[in-house]
Image 1 (cartoon, rainbow, N blue to C red):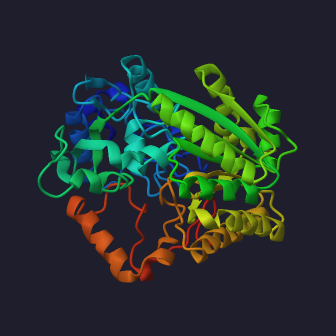
Image 2 (cartoon, helix red, strand yellow):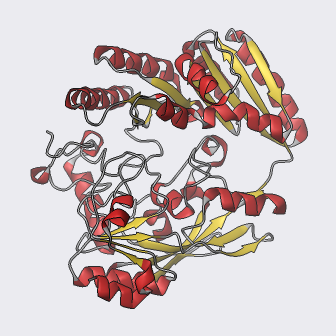
Image 3 (spheres, rainbow, N blue to C red):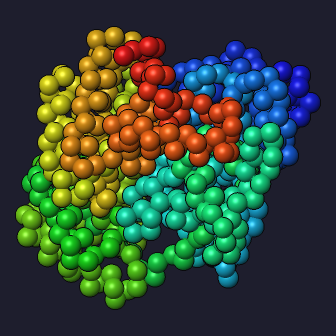
Length: 471
């Protein structure tokens, strides 16, 4: 197999040593499963050749960007050939008149933003991992981020894809035109978590930088006050670029880690971006201040220059890393549940109560504008008792979310970690339909198996996190 792969991409771009296989065996969840080989193709044709070799040996194909997935999406749970996209890293073309850029999947989100910014544009999706996450990974997970409140998630900005399907077939889905006839197959693949094919090129819609922007750090006595202010902002027809919420433990955490300077006496803070025409931003800022004052805001810090704005964002963007550094093991489990905005305070309360019941410390941050909550739980992967409590808490958090009319994932994807929980949201008929759609693209289910959509109920495995055959 290694010889056959080397014949496609060159021996230097096939990794089969123990250290290399270990390096590509996990993603940001920490779950580890070792692949048979790792391949770094340099073109779409090489990707097609690798897929053909893997199929000839009956092995799965697992596409991988930067490995920042928080749901096990990049973990080769059944072994196979990992196709790493790090060499597919070209910005192919940019067209300002059509507001469009064409990139390969290994281009990082940060690199694309740095390319676009001096040209007066930006790409809307900005996950917290934007410094290292790849555009291919953003497409696979349908990434969101803080600014999806105003601009939408990745799928709203994907115009076209080039994809290698089963058998090494290379197809073009969609394209540069705004309205493309036929089924929206690019939309089907966006968010499919690598289970239908390997994306080799992406045509994206980009947006002009706003004429004016202001960032606000607003402190409140409680999470309830902050969340209620968010609901009133949306009801008042404000459409901020982002509204982020952090509770008091998270505030103290990021202050200690990165010197964020957030007010530690506050029960919660909001980080709010207002963007648009200059006059529009001024008017919205006044309305926002009035709403926050009605909900007992104790302080409002405002910035309109990029350096100061970045300083106000620093703590929110550092939340996950700060928590990982503060733990004794470096392992943090982060959930990704979404509830209707009005239920966000109740969801915060339920999450913290679940943590107390299982003796787990939980810090919470949220994309409050769309009700996307990220409970973060430090844990020791070598402590079976703590793993068992974490598993039960994780399941109860998702059940609480569904009881409030929410979703088990907002932006991190289903991956491996939430695959059995899909049965809580969908019935057998809906899940069977999803599998049928997948098999149109991948008849033998060799692309990233064990992800996104569970098999029939009689195949239920109940595998979770680091434990094998845990039911």
